[in-house]
Image (cartoon, rainbow, N blue to C red; front, side, top):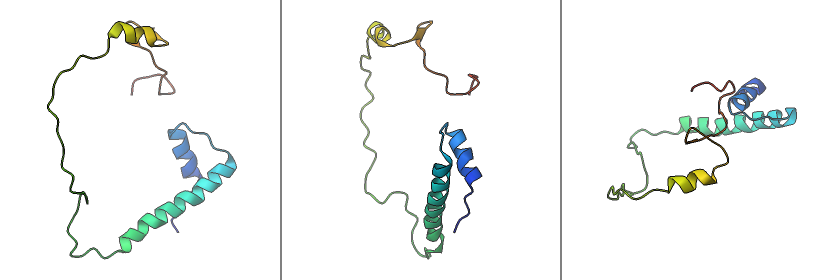
Length: 101
C-alpha cells in the first residue's frame, strides 16, 4: 500500500484552502492511499508491443471559423457586478497576502 501521510493530506488541504476535521484527514489519508495503489497497479501491466495512444476516440478537432461577434454591453455588465474599481470588476483575492501570483 502506498504510504500517504496525514501531513501530506493536511498540506494539500492547505494549498487548496480547504479545512478538514481530524476524522476527515484520517479518512482522506486512507482513501488517497487506495487511489494511488490502484494507479500503481497500472505499472504492473505488460504494455510491450502496445502502441502509444493519446486518445482512444476517433474525435478530430472540430474547428469553427474565427468570427468576431459583439460581446456584452459593458455598461450593463458593470451595472450588474457587486463591486468594481477603476472600471474593472473587483473579485476577492486568491492569495492570502493579496500579492501578485
